[in-house]
Length: 74
Image 1 (spheres, rainbow, N blue to C red):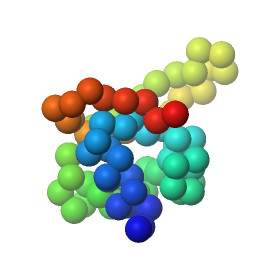
Image 2: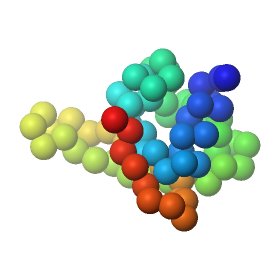
Image 3: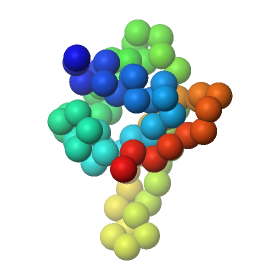
Image 4: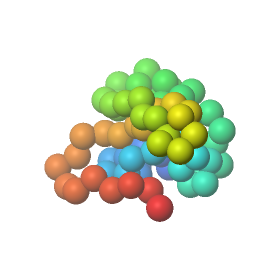
């Protein structure tokens, strides 16, 4: 299974990914690239900038709208 397939399957099940989550889940250090590839295939993936309260660093969270409950990875 490819990284894109792993991410897509998990997001369709309601998992929300951050770059660190994606590294731990499927070994990719290029989550934004994988998301771009999935979007190019027509998948409707949403994103939002978030800021770490402790460090002030910003990163994106990615998810897909699902009818079931949305879960955070880990």
